[in-house]
Length: 316
Image: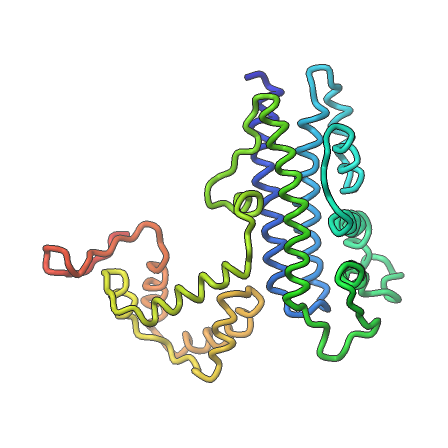
């Protein structure tokens, strides 16, 4: 394989995984958002999506525009752009890319965000218009879902409803999977495997599995119910049952469960965890050692049904 084909096959293949990871993280961030009013959350969502989709479009453009006759330096310079719509236009010169109005408008928003909005707060003028990310997102939702948003959000904030989540999820995946299929078809046509994805990766979830973050939330809930109620046993389960629980407050169960589905929610509980650990006095190290065993890939627990009498041990 010559250097050009190796570049397009392996390095751009790695970029497929990178782009899919950014897209997945953007979808996850939006799913976790309770309100549409917090600039840091909106920024993270828009940044991850803009980076992921931009990189994906650039992969597709390279696969079509690069050849042995290509001026490599000129091609690479032409890729120094953050306009998603310009990249899409270049791609459409070579192949059909079926995207509708919602997808085009989202790409336009992401291009605007990456080119200007992400730096806007470094300008003095931002004092007079501080919520441009929110305005851009609400404009998109308003146009395609026929909803209205107040210019002055209520004191309790603007709720991020499941309807909004489904729209963003559907629109993002339509773009990502359409461009991925274009990449796959082109790679096959030129005898490359750029499209191959690592099993169980975030990129595979985005491009092939049609990831549904809400379904992933169902997974942790079902696992939680299983651990709490299963009559079955194993060396691992007996190890978990043998650890004395900390004295968390049952009245705050909602807050605790929220930690499973939101990184932001963990911050509200960390203070309580630190307080409970402070009461362990000299046993913190022992407790942390037990915690390090849970989820470690290098731990084996004998089953209680083993012939050696059921004594449990862990091999780190």
